[in-house]
Structures are given as structure tokens and as C-alpha cells.
Image (tube, rainbow, N blue to C red; front, side):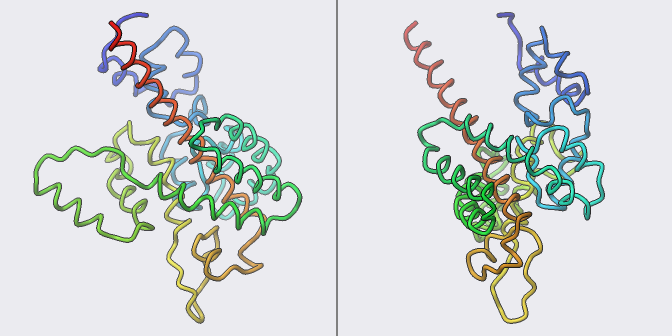
Length: 276
């Protein structure tokens, strides 16, 4: 294996969104590593700007990491917001087929219960029982979304910055994703290596849109954990919202599988280094 530096990888971040990146990575290890650390698999080779993809998630609450397939992702980006669910509905079979494939890849023992339950939600959805599918997917999706919302690592420049961060994070658990998204910024403010994390958590604030089941309170129009738990209605437990809930589960669950694989790789490397 050729010797490369971390700077070699960073230098390749300018090319991870090139439409021919999948061809370019052949024989280019720094670019391969840069792609793996910065872009969800379903974005690679689409040539779409990250900001355009992330807008689909933040505006419409549609998961964009790992799901949907690249061809459908392109259509969602090109569509106006009010047409995005129309596109997902028209391509439900393709989205669900991809969800099945990704679920098969989630083989880590830690994910067993989630994998089984999400699989059963998909089964119910295919059978036409979208109310049952959504209720189960939302129940499983809540802890998955909370896992994704937790910050993994943060380096502070001062004690004052650390105290300010701790004060800001003394909020309800359902607000963590919103705070994280604000922290990574948008456009030029967002660090290039933070795009993947942004993609994963971008639909979560809508999933946790505040709702207290008060008389006359407007029910969110997209899949909502709080509505599903506190005031489930036929109007809310729909085919579209069930599909979104399943997609959110798959998106986060597949990222958890990738995280577990990375941990195991690091453990294996530490073991072999200790043998030398």
C-alpha cells in the first residue's frame, strides 16, 4: 500500500462531488478515503452540490443519507418542495427495495433488535398496513434519531467555549439535532468533512417537531414522533409518512452499521500493533 498523509486526503475533498468521482477513485487512494469520510454512498457520482441535497432533508424532512437511490435523489433535488413526496410516492417500490438491501447489510449484533423490528415495519408496509408500519418505525426510529443527534467529538479552544457549549446543550433531548445543525453551519460555513453528519441528522428536527396535543394545535404535515405517540390519527399515519419513517430508520441504522465496522477495524488494528 502506498504511503499517504492525512493532508493528501484533505486535498482530495475538492473532488468528492465530481460526477466522475467513481471512476477517479480507481487507483487514487487519497480520493477514495476522502470520499468515504465525507459523502454518503448514495450521493457518490451524482455530481449534485451538497447544499442542494441537504435542502431536501431540511425543508421536507426526507432522509438523504444512504437512502434514497441516486436516481431518485436526483429527481428530489430537481423538484420543487411540494412535488417531492409525489416523487417518493411514485417510486415507492424502488425506495423500499433499496431499504431491504440496506437492512440486509446491518448485521452487527448490537443492531439485532432494531434490524428485526424495522424489517417487520417494512413487511407491514408492503402488505398495505401503513398505519402499523409507521407506528412501529416511529417507535424504533426515536432512539435511533436520538443516537444520531448526539455529538461524537468536539474540541474546544477555551474553557469559556466549553461552558457556553454545555449551557446550550442543557435542553430537551429532542432539540439536540437542531442545535447540532446550527453548529455545523450552512454553505461556506459548513466544514467539508461535516457534510456526511449533516446529511444524517438533517431530517431529524422535523421528526421531532414540537407537538403537545393541545386543543386546536395544528398537527405537523410530515412524519412526527410526537403526533404518533400522543395523538395518532388516520390523517397522520399515512402511506407517505410511513415511508418517511422507514427511510429514517434505515438511514440511521445503516450509518450505525458503518460506525460499528469502523470501531471493529480500529480494534483489530490496535490488536495487531500490540503483537508487533
